[in-house]
Amino acid sequence: MTWRIAGEHITVVRTLMSSDLKNLTEKTAKLSIDPIYETNWCDMPAEIKLECIGKMKFNERLSLRCTAKAERSLVDSQKVEIDEGRFGEDNEQSTFVLLIDNKRYFVKDSKYMNDAFELLNYIKKVGDFKTLYFSLGFAVLFAVYERFHTDDGLFTAKEIEFSNGIFNTVVAVLRKIKNGVESIKLRYGGLDSDQLAGILAIPHVQNVSYWHIHDYEGTDSLHKVAQMWIDKNAKLGSTFQVSNYDDGSFAEFLEHLDDRILSKNEQRVRIRTNNADCHILLERGLNEISEIVDFPQYFRLKVISAEMKESEYDNDCKEWICIMDPEVSSDSDNSSEQSDDVHEYDD
Image (cartoon, rainbow, N blue to C red):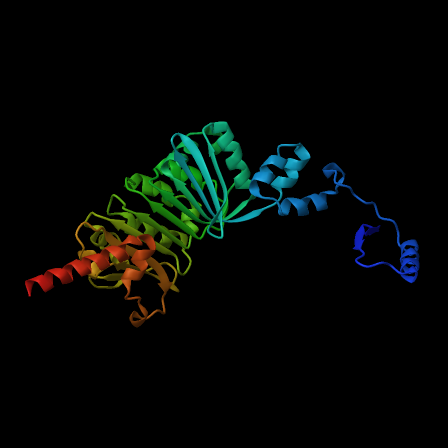
């Protein structure tokens, strides 16, 4: 048996005594009668609708925002915290995958550019991402799509990653990211010196705490990034890592920044900046990792305190190399096992 009083539902699980009924009657008389909303959605106040939208699944939100302009505005005002957004291309279709707690929260394929853009635009409005991942196919489509460039909306994300991308793709996407990015990862080959200069001109790259380029085709990245940091007075802890197969990056760094060198050896170079409180430390990955056949050379640049002592340097280069190339750990372990097998055989 259910009683409705001032918007409250009181479920009676036992037979009410006459005294109980009298008390309820008196209570009802004293209360103001608030409006009671039935199940009709349009009769609900906006604040109640927002509570409901907050509990809806992503597909349900997409359906609701198609019903009316007012509903679209309400749905678009509700942010969604998303661990990972993966945008790719498969069989000429744009693919959207959103993950929360390592589970697929939303998956959608679209073969029509306008539909894909509308979906991307909504995701961009409401998504608060920990990580955004763009693959080559998807990013190329939107890099050449005029509406992507002219739209004012921006992504909100802490980490951005590009896989097998191209220069125009990286620039187009990074220009659509709000301030606050903490990590940028470029995992592809083909980036040349002129394109690197263009990327270094992007404010997100200048201010990000960590970024790396995987398989850079050139030897000038180290001294150019260091010079950019010097010019922009980069913050303490700023880190850049790069891998490449060409010799000369270390030597080119020494040549271009010779007048700033404070100390150097075969593994590290320390230089001064224009800020008396900060130095820049260049480290080269030297140990069994660099001796593996067909593996690139790894370098790390970091803005450090001018007070840091050499005894405080990080000697575990494998740890920081694995941040940009996790495969190094398993490959180096396999290489060591193979080496052990050879020595065992020789014995």
